[in-house]
Amino acid sequence: MRRALTKGILFPSLGMALFFWLISPVLGKPLVIEKGVVQGDTIWEKEVVIRGDVEIARCATLTIMPGTVVKFVKIEANGPDNLYVEDKMQHFPRAELIIRGKILAQGTKDKMILFTSAEQSPHVADWGAINLLDSKNNILEYCEISYGHTSVHGHGGQVAVVNCYLHDNGVSIGHKTVKEFETKGTMTILYNRVTGNGGGVLCGKDSITMISHNQISDNNFFGIYGKNALSAYVRYNNIAHNGKGIILWITQGFRISENNIADNKKYNIALMEGQTWDLGVHHNWWGTTDEKKIKGLMWDRDEDETLGRIDFSGFAVSPIEGAGIPW
Image (tube, rainbow, N blue to C red; front, side):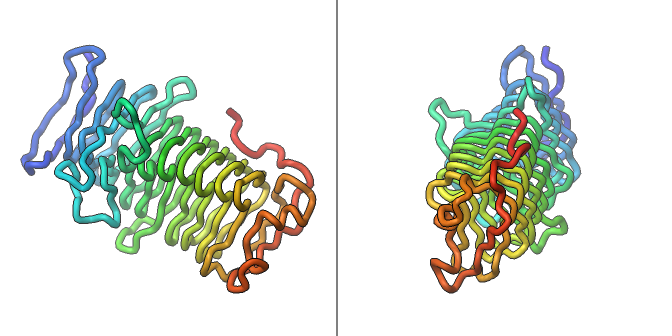
């Protein structure tokens, strides 16, 4: 018999408190969780199917064991299986794992944790997000995450995303600070493979981000997008074959160095309307030592006089050793 997976209090959609210690009597039978709020510390393992928004309350910690498969059923967008239909600023149209407490999803290299769609033929945005709301000390390690809207998203959340593989998502990782929340949006993104998404990493309003030793490639629109971000440290990444490598909008605090940024389809780095500040991007490898070719894959004041200027002086003359992921 499988051991207990969930211990706590679940408030389902009817608003009645159900106290339970849930045990699945059949080995291999998935644990199915309906829309509701989990109030106590909880352990998930083996296979978990989520049917609607599931919230981990502020007092609770969700621990997900290595090798666990978490599948999200594709629910009606903004329908009866959502907990917060009216709040479209902080929530997504389809099923979310909402973290107000804490999530510890720590797989291993040989037993990664999988977050994905439950559909037979999955598509991007079948589910919403692992949505961190004013939540601290979260860890996603050795996880494979696919077919979400913005699969890891922080609204005033603190999280480390380490050794993960994120693919086939609308945006793989996004976060911002929310002024109503005590917790500042802070992310550490380290040793991940972020590939084949609509967008790679979105650093939103007043966020603080460390992005290091990642493979960020083959994302349709962007590798990294700084959108009114407070600060970010972008070092030792391979950023290649994206629609645009890095784009910045109303962002002053980006520090971009010791990366391999090359072969992106439209621009390796581009400033957007409103990005009036100059940007220094020194000691990066741009795929060539030909300054004209390097500049040809940048968009700044030379193309639009309202923008700042990109200073790429002191560029690397060969690929940066040690950049990217070790696996």
